[in-house]
Length: 331
Image (cartoon, rainbow, N blue to C red; front, side):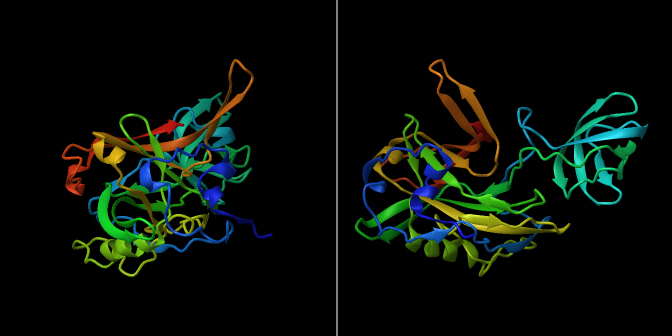
């Protein structure tokens, strides 16, 4: 069955997530409404060598947080002790995972795994590269999945926007890879937060996507770097769909996307900016308040920028990543 939704789903309503308030002209007017689209489309990917140099790009650590529910495999008939940090492999399935924790009860126990590729099978032998061997006493119990994410710092472009005229926009160019072993639904949400806590969702600017694609996808890359010349670049709405798993050893099947915000007075005055990216994981936390209402928070990537300089002449060289540049939060 095909699922057809309108743009409101992309902005978070279908996920129950908060949609930031409108500020200035960025969210008050703009292009005509986007037509209906389907959620079950498979997003186009481009092959990028995994070990190729990255130019001006920050790669996010997708290792599960301690509070995340991680994948686990029970084991029995242990013949040698497992070691934290070692890679364990299923001898029949070929599945692999990095050992994050080992609840060792002698001959039996439970391995908590990260960076899992494939599906471990009950009854198969499992062995570490440098330590440990046993028999899997259960199939893999899936935990929180996390998509790999990389981005370039916020950049600017001046473009003509219908109903607004010629405006400067901020954009975040990013790359997403699904190493979870299964197709995953990707419904990203991007929010820009100023230093006074005002949030704005990214805006739909189809005409700006081509401007950025020309800038990012037609320039020669550094020697030895991965080339994305001619690769598709997806903006809001078009970037919603299924991401196929990337399963080759040396090549990533990457989705390339971009998020936009119109540079208004409030953003220009801010001395720091935060970008929140939701939709990279299915992790969530549900708590109950004193009034009995449920508070749902989603695993979210927060990227932090300093923005010194003149509010009347905001230039991309003045937008700098903080140190550390990002943090996983539940928001």
